[in-house]
Length: 150
Image (cartoon, rainbow, N blue to C red):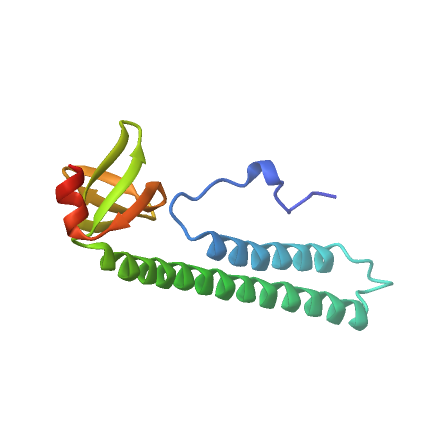
């Protein structure tokens, strides 16, 4: 009896396609291949029972709905991450013009916060041509502290 369902090793990566779309279409393709194979090779004396068929359909439907739920959760997580980064950036904008002291690879540096930005998903301050991650800040004070400390 020939096997019409391709093995995992025969499945190729499809480049830039959305992961969820590949999984969803893959589930549908796999289900249809299994169903067609079952119908093609079923014993005519014992055909597929209705309850078995409906059980398979219910399982497929559940898997499909779980995949849709997973996609919605991923979209919600991405939206939340974007919102959270925006909120943090907005809060960090309050630092503009403030004096700071930070620990960097160069050692302890101080200056005025000239700009606030997102770099690789992290909030950084810019001062004197340097980008300093927010978590490296040791102290923040008024502009008069920077003129005394530099």
